[in-house]
Length: 431
Image 1 (cartoon, helix red, strand yellow):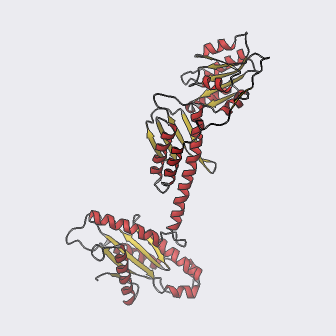
Image 2 (cartoon, helix red, strand yellow; image 1 turned 135 degrees about the vertical axis):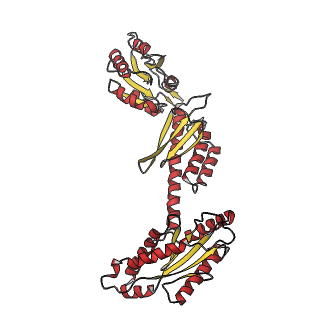
């Protein structure tokens, strides 16, 4: 550690007015060549600044949220200090609007508490006179056990956003030794500990230079935050941004992996996973699930006559048309080619003895077939002849099958039977 102190010049005075949470201590450590004087009221600050015996190099005034005449206080401080003295305000994030207004009354700048050393240097115009090599004990460093926590957070990026934010809040609270932490991102919030009142520390979160949320910190009852805590929070906020970005990318990759490129509908991979979930729910709650396979009759002929781009357009419009005819929570997927799979699962009551095969899937399919018969396919052109038709096979749980693979196989058998019976038909297993 080296001290750059000139013995030929008298020490400068730094005046702290209404000391905002320990700024005096931070100034004494960073500028040992300066005399730091602290007063606890604006009136005492004006009197101290007017002392002709020793010049004031800079004034740091805390922003009291209960002071309604802060601009007048700033004007008075400026008058007694003169224009060569730096006048800087320091406030908690909630008081930033007051600080901005007060700057117009004569202050040079304002800082958000707790300021970093570099922020103090720039605002006060004073170079730091203490230099030291970083030490593992510095507040901004991350301890090995905290790195373990980071590894755990990275392993949970697949969690839902709310659950991930709760995990982040818990680890941030532990790493920052805070009384409470709230993490907000993409309109979702996670928190840990006590989060009441106005947080003294707030750090924004960004993605691609756009604000997505913030991290808010509350201290424990036994301690308040220091500039080192603020610096450490900035490190954690950047780490949080990276974890949230990774989670967003993971969700995007999963969505792409589960989506059919041509139609935008869920694909076969998604169907298998969702059907497993719904069958497990049905087994537990004694409910029913119906699976349907349908395809476009004579689709190869459309491809051969009009070309594959037109065939793709037919598949896209057919899939979207069925999605419109279906209920919102039913699962409509493209299995491949011109084949689609649909899961109906909204049983209102547990199944009981004598219950019949659900009629609602048939209602949806009949509605779809009527809409398909009236739908115009612009890609076919004005000379298109005939009506596009579909064939379908349905199978239900638990009557026709007990597992996902059995259910799909039985529905496929029913679809083949519908084709054998002349197409443009609906066939139920056991019909």
